[in-house]
Image (cartoon, rainbow, N blue to C red; front, side, top):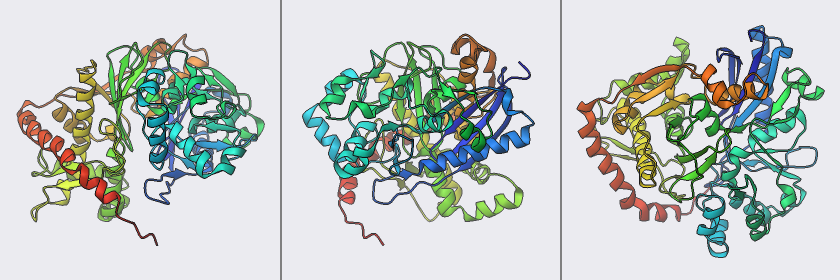
Length: 512
């Protein structure tokens, strides 16, 4: 397999990342490129799909130029993505309007309509999960109501990975793993639910064919080859949502195994042999047929740290340039200099509303316990601990539903911070392990690509050959009681502030 390589591409919330891996899971090259998110109105979050494509082409050309790997040596390509997004395209694949990303929460009005006219119980019974602006269906209803020309011109509604797949090979499709995030999916049939589509009055023709994650959607076209550097004719798989890719990267291939992924958000995933039909958490598909993921997800845990870097971390950004390192490395060092508990400072990580388990568009970030003695390092550590408390809240919701992970694998950009990994182990009072090749969701894509290329018979076999064990972090009993106390306060803060969040959301914003 030494002359065969697999390409994994992840279209994330803040940027695209791609890797080339050999058939044994060794990463031979990787690159990434950031892109912007626009927030034109309160609760809106939009991206330009063309930015995803330009980033994909740029990083692949860089990889081929620096790695020495010939494009013809790539046996298959798999793409994962942030999800769900609403990407409306015409028959040629041209983008009709900015993509509303998973962070976009403008569709509360449509959610209210769904609760009245269809009901959360019926939707949960078919699709799983609850009614919330996070999911695709309310976004699509908003488009139909407030951008009718775009809706009428829309040929297909794609996800971010589906958009890249279409650009690579011309095929319109959606992978089965992302299906439950649409709120239009039949978990039993693993296809669109005619009942839900009809009940919402949506056009079934605008929804693309659903393919298994490892299915070959098409082959790289000559035009895409010229833009991206891939060889024409290279197989392109349907791919998967980034959570499913992260689960594969971490080796989650069976019931009861659990993974947490921290990037812009923090996502908890627990393997299950049945789709989840509760409403505190939500379901997600897996690339292994018959295996499902029970998911608890925050919105802006890692995003809060990025916000700190961008708004308050000018000194760290300058010093990082001087040292030639990532500013997040300096932030991690700062957090390590603050004691557990961040000198009695707590952070609610609800910087752009929150998903599970509180599901509140109006919730906002809070620093609780600020004093004149508070240092910048304390704020950084409080942000990390707040994300860990939010993860613990989701684990407790999972336990209430009968899912109780005893340990977690940790992946995503946040896993690069040793101090953050240790904080999670201490707050959760569970061991944290990392995979040996922690390259992000793109590594999971490469593993899937190995299956699509025929190197392995299925994902289980591919994981056995391509995933190795990395560092681990054990909980420190000395801090358990302190974190238990702080967590109880953390849990009490949101109910005490919920009404005030709603009142704050009603205050007019004078946009420039």
